[in-house]
Image (tube, rainbow, N blue to C red; front, side, top):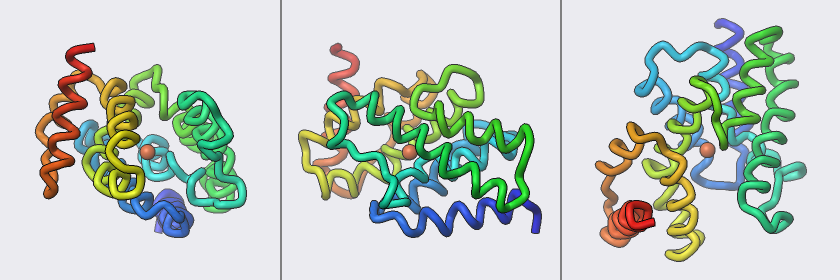
Length: 189
Ligand SMILES: [Fe+2]
C-alpha cells in the first residue's frame, strides 16, 4: 500500500470517530465530487478533500460554533485547526515535504479558496453539503438554520457548481422546497 493510500485509510479512521453523523459520508463524497470536477486532482488535493473537516472528529479540540459571533470566523478557525490535526497524521504515514505542506494549506483555506486547487476543493465540499449533509443537518437543526447554512453554502459555489446543485432533489419534498427557496433567494439578492 502506498503512503497516500495508508494516509487516506488513517484519515477515514479518524473521521469515523466524529460525533457528527454526516461526517464520514461527507468526507468520501467530497473526494468523489472533487474527482468528478477534476479527474486529475493530485494526491495533496485528494488528501485535503478527505480530511478538510477533520477538526470536527476530535471532540477535545473541536472548534465550537458557540464560541464565535461570526460564522466566517468560526469556519476559518475550523479550517486552521483541521490543518493542525492533519499534519502529524501525514508525518506518521510518511507523507512529507511539498505534498504534506500543500495538503495542510488546502485544508486551511478550504472555506475560502483563492487558487485553482482550493477553489476546486471549495466547490467539491459545497456540492457535497447539498448532496449528502443537508438532510441530516435539517433533521438536527430545523428549517431556519438549514436555510441559513444552505444559502451561505450556495453563495460560495462557482457557476459550474451551482448548475450541479440545481439538479439535486431529495426524498423529502420539504428539503427540495428548501433548496429551491435558497436558489430563488440567491437570485433575488
Ligand atoms: Fe466540508
